[in-house]
Image 1: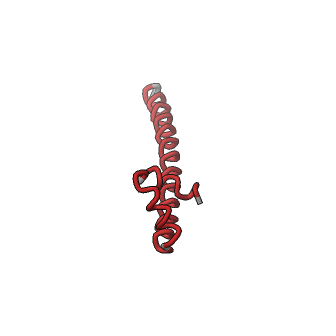
Image 2: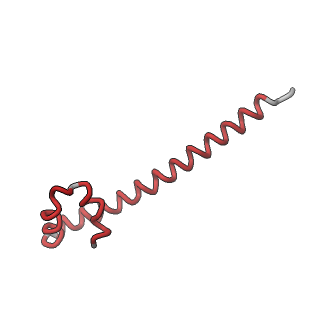
Image 3: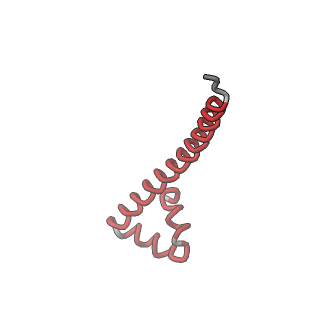
Length: 73
């Protein structure tokens, strides 16, 4: 459970005790925490993929420019 709410506790560290109490006593709060965790993981994954794609695009642009500048009709 700790891993699942780690980012939530980081985000709302001043309310850690309340967060833990709500998770233990409120199924709807726990469900929202679950979704928060899933969305956070997806965003982290997308950010990594976006960074990788930006690097790939930059490389492709360099490759294209090199071929465009070196083209002899």
